[in-house]
Length: 425
Image 1 (cartoon, one colour):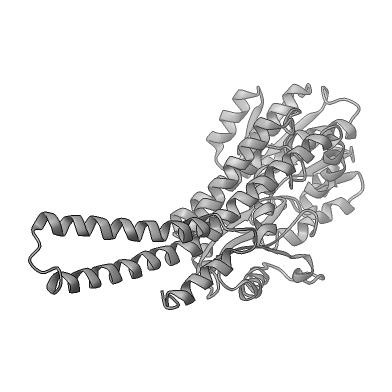
Image 2 (tube, rainbow, N blue to C red; image 1 turned 30 degrees about the vertical axis):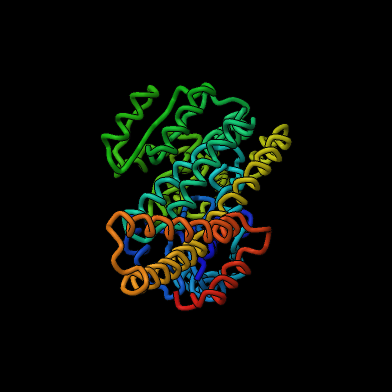
């Protein structure tokens, strides 16, 4: 039975950050999560993708409707907190060509909040490798993900979609520039010194920030990043003591719980004599309790607040995005042809086997009776001749199977199965 690609998930367009983080996958438990996904009856292969802008399940199935139902339930049951809105209201579900197109667009950064940003491809590769290590991907998803990587490369090579390099971190710094008249005289605290944090530091430095504090759970990493950007490393357990020095606090740490509560911020404001503070939260799961935005002289922006700035960055690249979508459509057709061919392979093998069995049976019967007494050389000549005849007979139907008329793939497969009695093959 032919397999179909399905994708179920939510992203920055369908759900706010407080909903997305409720179903975000914990990377430390990713292996267990993938095993649970693979254990679903309708899921033959499965992978997940969890970033600050999306949470998605990618699966190969032979029962689309059952997969939709089971994967939606799988995501709903992942919620770490109850919310006012129904999670299912935020979910989308794609199958077949729509699912393949969606993943190719995600890999190519055409579905990102910041179109053209390069980080999503690296994240997609990381989640594919995690699924591969967990043994939850097989032939179909292996081919799908590697094809998506190639599509992303084509898009970046053949279009100008990445001509103006943008990223979530660059958009965050662009927002900071709008908040302040100038950044040169502002002090910034960065919480989290991973890839995102490093990128934020680079953009801050390019925009004139010279007073930078860096904190990270692993102090050595904070020291390393701070040294690269002439900043000051702060021990993670002590960073709240230094908040009073910061005009802008940027959070991009991977943390299961809020790192800053309203009480801490209120105390910090007293020490700052109520001088305004700005917070930008870039965490996959929010780093800052959203209630701090209710405090006077405190202004909190989360990942969803970056969308206006990101949309403006897309201006001037709309034409390139259209070119990129044409590449995606072309690649989708190619992948679907390959996927359809998987159903043809067993039929081709069974057909060859059936004709070979007939050839062998009839040849052996003749060699025992009418052709009895032939020399070894004569036997080999007949063997070669009958094998060549089978090859000639098979050439036309196999060629038709491999290059069917549009929409007739299944028709040819079923016709051959019935004509040659291959239904059980």
